[in-house]
Amino acid sequence: MATVSDAVSAPAHAPATPDPTPDPTPTPPGDRTDAEATSIATPDLTRRGFLRGAALTGGGLVAATLAACAPATPTPGWTYGPVATTTAAGSPTPIPATPGPSASAAASATPAASGIPAGWTAHDIAARDVVRRFVGNLAPAFQGIYGDAAFAKIVDILGADVAYPELEKKPAFVQVPQLVLNDALQPLTPEIDGDVKVFRLTIDEIEQAIDEMKPPIAGLGYNKQTPGPTIRVTEGDKVRAIFTNNLKETTGVHFHGVEFEDFFQDGVPFVTQRPFAPGEDYTYEFTAGRSGSMMYHSHHNATDQVGRGLLGAFIVDPADPTEVDIVDRDYVWISNDVLGGFTINGHGFPAVVPILAAVGEKVRVRFMNEGIMYHPFHSHGYKQTVVARDGYPLGANAYGADTITVGPGERWDVNIEADRPGLWAFHCHILPHVEGPDGMFGMVNVLIVVPKKEQVDAIVQALLA
Image 1 (cartoon, one colour):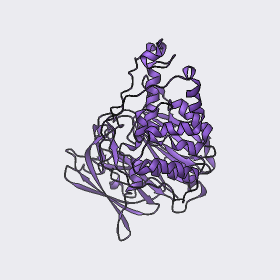
Image 2: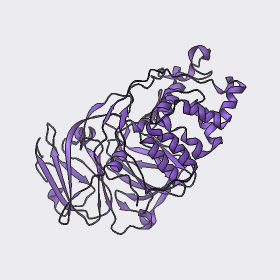
Image 3: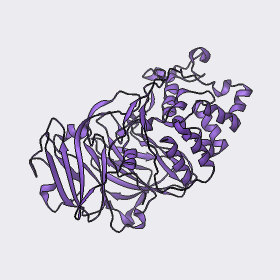
Image 4: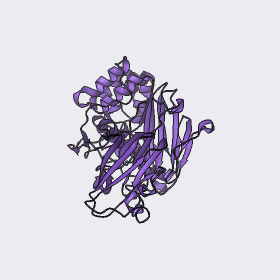
């Protein structure tokens, strides 16, 4: 079973050199000349237009585009190369949107002078800029993946007949440390002490970048990241988790969903233990009794400590997996609505890692709600087959839905059978959690389905080149 959820420390990141290039606004479709229209319809010209501004270090993006057009040597599951992530401090500032009805009503009468296409408002420009940041310099690879006709439509949607600065940058989600990438690059591998798997984690004050443009905010994390590294074991494993408290305050750790034989391992200060103080270690030792999607988080001053980032995924794989459990890609989706607003895996759109899949693959998405609100996650274009709730398999009672409401503390496991290529929005459907006058933000993601597995691997290798 391929997985992206077994890892720990966040890649180091440093500020990138600001890009002073202004963001030119493309000519609206109705105002284009014949020559401009031809440049969009002609794949070669369109690709050259994209590549004017798209250059990955080491030629990764060009390699990805070529690899997407011809079979590459398959690599198992999610494949990542070495990565040095950067923070793009120089992305152009979008045209400010005026809140309220005036933002949608005040179309520009003089688009050439204002830089806003006829009939558009500042909201349209800001909303497009957000998606441009999400796509980044991955854009040229879409031609080899989806074909010339679809690529021409993407060019038109993004206004990419005129180069813009985001084409020179990696997507927003690659510019900040990510749970998914960290888990794959540096999995949290246990020490082995006899028949016990030993995991060591620190509890730290951190700064969390919600996206690549906002300044980091103060938070808390395990192993200096939030969500913490995924702890992954197999049903029946003996587990020892040793936490070192580097905070200036006491804390405790609860493994949410685990059914302990020894209730003193439950991690609730003043019920099953004393809180452990700054500088102290505390050890939890138990047997992973049942498989499923669990969590670990603080259970001491929890409104504050979990809200500020003391949370992570604890996954127990079945000892004898069934056909439902065997998937091609396994994705952890932890929602929170306190630290930095509405986030998925500690980040808001466009800095949210997409769910990538190839036609014919089965993807597991593990929704885990570590916040204080309900979130109905809606998949565009695809059925989610709900196979487990709170780690308990539904078996014959599995059912299909396109919107799954996940309450605080709940975990819902869904399988998605990828049978059609495309770019499909995947988001919370409480609309103030996902979109405003400046476009999409917060709990928005995209399911990217490509025709072939090697194209998924090519995209990922290019992103991290």
